Length: 88
Image (cartoon, rainbow, N blue to C red):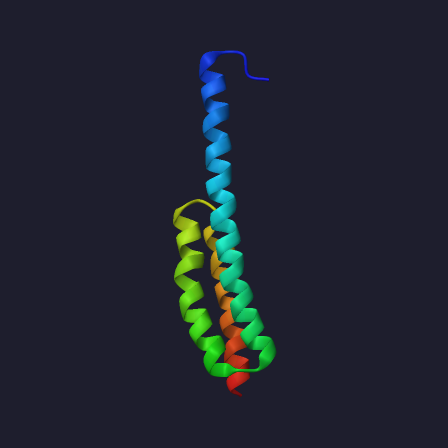
């Protein structure tokens, strides 16, 4: 438990940041889910559009410190590969 005033303030700040980060992470997951649902349905056009919308959101998570840059790149790469496979 925090005892000093600065530690108590830090604990309050961490609580607020945690809520913001959870919301952002959940938002990113939602966009990824939409792409995966479009892939599962086999709709190439819908999957492509969903991926175009999801890419900036995933990368925004990188700038906000939610996701590591390599993790985001890997997710985008794998999703785009799966979308590309639908076209074939």
